[in-house]
Amino acid sequence: METKSQKRFSFLPIDFGISHFLPGHGFWIFFHMDEARPMKRIGLTLPLLLLIVFAIVFHPSMRIHLMEFTNPWLYMLFSPQMFFLLATILILSKNKMHPREIGVVVQPARKNISMGLIGGLIPFFLLAIANFVIGKIHPSPESAGLYEFNSWMLFSYFILSPITEELFFRGILFHGLRENYSVMVAVVASSMLFGASHSSVMAGPLMLGVITAWMVIQTGSIIPGIIFHSLANGLPWFYANHCQHLQPFERFLFFRF
Image 1 (cartoon, rainbow, N blue to C red):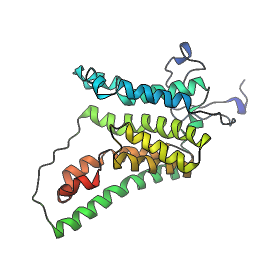
Image 2 (image 1 turned 90 degrees about the vertical axis):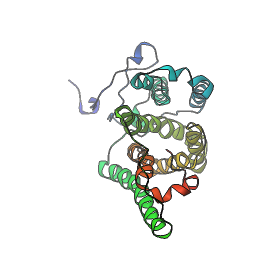
Image 3 (image 1 turned 90 degrees about the horizontal axis):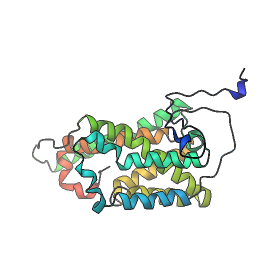
Image 4 (image 1 turned 120 degrees about the vertical axis):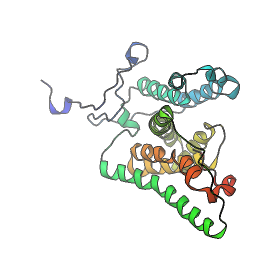
């Protein structure tokens, strides 16, 4: 019979079968709650090595082969997001770490969820206010919205990308950097690497990386960052369809998450 300290509770258990080909036990990815244990070191060697592999595999000259997939759901299996998910699983398994040790913790739920929601909605309000003010000063003609989502884009942009990218960049890389450098260096370096993973270090991903890293510092959880990241991925749609007065200033905004 299990004692209270031995009990484990997991929500949405997903066993990827990595115990067959990676060190450690099966991987329980979402909302794993276990007894407290000392924090293990993540290190930087493996995360940075995996980023080099990512840069090679997803270099524009190599990605042309991935574009041959006509089914977008099949393409998603070979996407950067899936790479980051598998990279996170590899590092956690190698170090015999639980997801909670990289910030996959919900509690306190109200604080974490509200921080992500409020933080994610602020850019929408700022864009709406800026669009209203510019519209009064220098109105632009109405234009048809050009940014639309289909079913696989909705899943990729609002579920898969926020979860997998926050797991790797804020869960793994940011914590690994904090083990070796100051908090400021960890925030800047992880944000720049996150921006570089989006083809170029644009202002949008760079800002997103800084904000979500700050949320990890404040809460110890990546949940607020996942929520913020998911909402932020809707900014291009909101900008293209509801901010026509700002479009002449697009090159100064860089809201391209």
